[in-house]
Length: 167
Image (cartoon, rainbow, N blue to C red; front, side, top):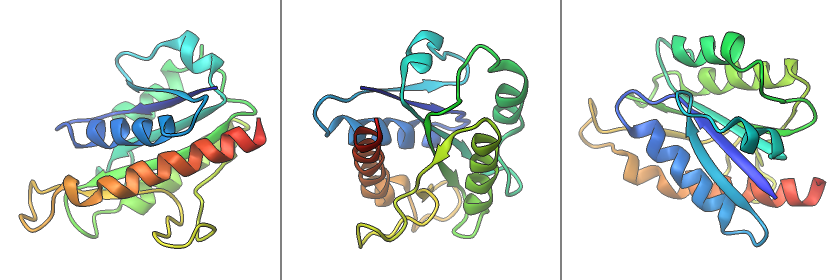
């Protein structure tokens, strides 16, 4: 089964998170996962995928304008309907609006007819209510994406398990 991760990344942190999610997805047998920047989406792969996770850095507590433009205007050749959807975010500050970014992305996915999944508290700790959020170390030196790797890989594993269950 194919699963895709689509992201916008400005400093490389969101790209890293996307790659961790794809690694977590591929921990499940029979899953082929690939991460794509919005500037290099493999449309055939995404259209064959049963699930798509979308991610963005937080820009003023919203997805980046580039991701918004991609989703609203440049993704017309992509089929989202009926697929499993998920979302993730990165941010520069501990309270930088990552959850709002995820809500924006999930709302887009719902309007495209996707089934949204986060795992919530169903698997216990770590609880990932809406999607994983990582705080980079660009501003808060005590933080850094490496502290959040497990959240992203675990989310990828859980997302793939649910996709295999559904499809």
